[in-house]
Length: 326
Image 1 (tube, one colour):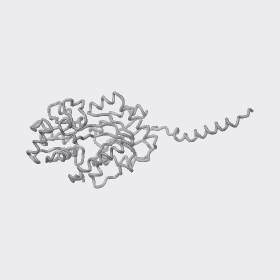
Image 2 (cartoon, rainbow, N blue to C red):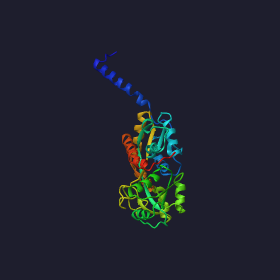
Image 3 (cartoon, rainbow, N blue to C red):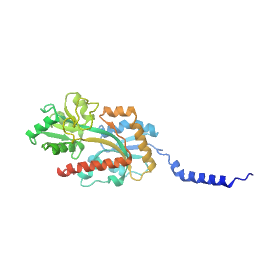
Image 4 (cartoon, helix red, strand yellow):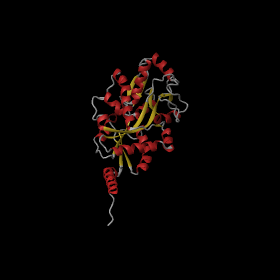
């Protein structure tokens, strides 16, 4: 039997040791089961729709079925709590929005801590809101609406999807920045709020392109401005809020992905990489554009900073207007 040189033995043992150290990573072939995306809102809204747009692409990239589960209630808190308490096995994710960072400012208590109970995965997309009014309102621009509201303090109303929602905070921001006085009418969701606006029971709203564009094209609502940095494909004739002369009133809804804190880091890394790949595809960008959305992938670290920024910018508006949801 030939003698193996000492140098060769050393090389063999170094390679064996390296392989042993990598074994736990290699053995964890994530994902090895179907994945669950919890949407903390009812079907049909912008966050739910964004999840369903991304679902096929992510499923293909990751090689696993992705099941979307809607668990609505309490401004998104019920679904968020379900994910925070889910097993830390990398199978359950939360499709969240800015509300998860804002809710602690509005609710007396929330059943989770955003920064302790969740692992950030990455941002997905931005969805600018649109300011719309009932056709009977004698205003064709934001400036005209503000002038009208100044002449009739408290007589113009705006509906929202509920206290503390983005559609509510946008109206409060407009009042704070312009000194006008509007009457807020909260509803249990965007759909009933939209129905009352169409019926003329309220005068204005701040909602996503997804919900407003069909009504604008049908002539049932009058758009005044897109509350984002650029015009949107669905409503190319509608100016941005900056073009309308009010650059400080930008309101963006965004979708992001979170997981229970403590899941394997490899699951966070691979899911983040998958979102980047899908969001960079032309097909996904086209589908999001049809909803008024803009692909906006991020790193987990960037997502944490985005949440902190949302909390900071809305804290003043919420405090000054004494907004509480319970």
